[in-house]
Figure 1 (cartoon, rainbow, N blue to C red):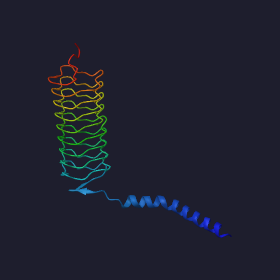
Figure 2 (cartoon, one colour):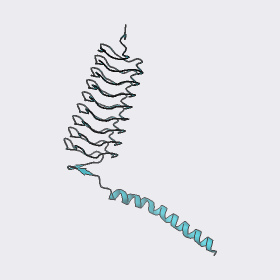
Figure 3 (cartoon, one colour):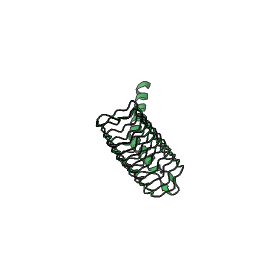
Figure 4 (tube, rainbow, N blue to C red):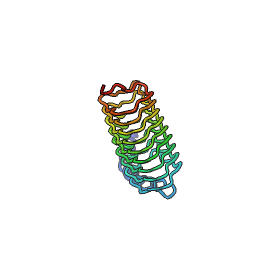
Length: 226
């Protein structure tokens, strides 16, 4: 047998061995993984941490789908790129938190406070955020399509280029909000406040602006239904 043939068989055996060991090695790595814990709250999917103290916690890039953080203190927490699909954050305090590029599809934010939070590029299709507070928050490029945002507050918030198509935003307070280039197509904003907001370049097709207050608003549809 030539040296070359022997070498090839040796390398082939190593390759086959690696393929056979691969799944078991991956399983071992998964078994060895331990979810991080912060103040007694295990930071993993479907965890139950209502009312937990997670102020300033590092939750970036974590898989937290289905978790319960209702009423939790998440002030200043880092949630960048976290998977928060279906998470319960009802009544939670997220003031000053960083949720850039987080995924919050079908999440519950009813009554939560996200004042001054950063939600740049947030992916939150079909969000439940009735009565939530986003005052002064940065939602540049955020996807809030089909969101339930009735009676929410976005005072002085930045929603530049945000996607709000078919969002329910009746009685929403958006005074002083930056809605430049936002997509408000078919959004329902009846009886909302847009005083001193800026809608320059926004898409307003088929939106409902019935009884909306628009004093001092830039590019608002002041002649809506005239």
